Length: 305
Image (cartoon, rainbow, N blue to C red; front, side, top):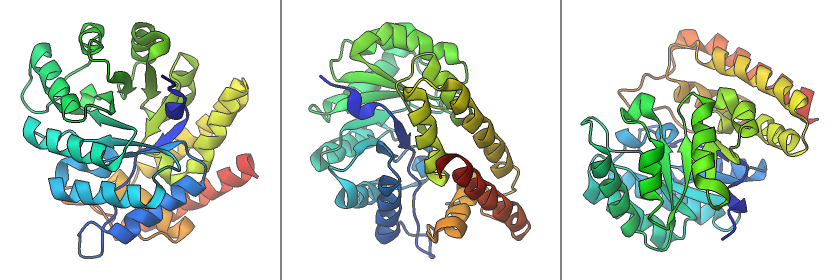
């Protein structure tokens, strides 16, 4: 089985809202088209950057349907399907498979700290609901409250549909350990955007990240440089990206609200805000957001012209 379709830049997709706060099919399709036209390898739909824990199950289905209607067959689609209970997670998994996604993904169950055998049972139940679809483990211990161990990954690999790990823990050593366990028959995605180069250098074949969509040109350029063995040049792009991420996080509004506003300023994409309780953009944030938009545009001209 070829895993090449998972190698490269896969933005974590933002949920797009109408002005009244409802999930917007039209704006979702516009964002999907924009990103595919920028040359990304795929889209990761319904994850942390998609505010998944604040959406109803039906809203998540609507968003994935809109993405698939717009770009199915043009890029790799990974649907994050985890909910706070197994039943609804399985419903989302089955729905995703019916649409023809390339893979489904899931964090571990959150809030209650469950033992590894219960986490494995949760993931395997979700995978069984999509029996013809690849399964990717999403490791984000700083938010989920549970960390993927090599032992749990080894147990999950008994399920032949488990093909990889989206690793959003900070130590790049985790990527190395997961890559060693998976070998050539699995894929590891770098999660922390600030370490795209270092994650790739130590073994990740691709990346899935929340800031990719606000500056896709820069991440695509980094991927090109890494593939060409030009790590020093890739690091220069990474350093500028990290400065941009720091500036984006300096606002009072939630990062995703800020990035949607940047996309509105740079690209004319109106994607709405974020869902409460996430804080929206404040009036006092606008000068900083405008500065971020200019800085991204300058970096794109610098590296991608």
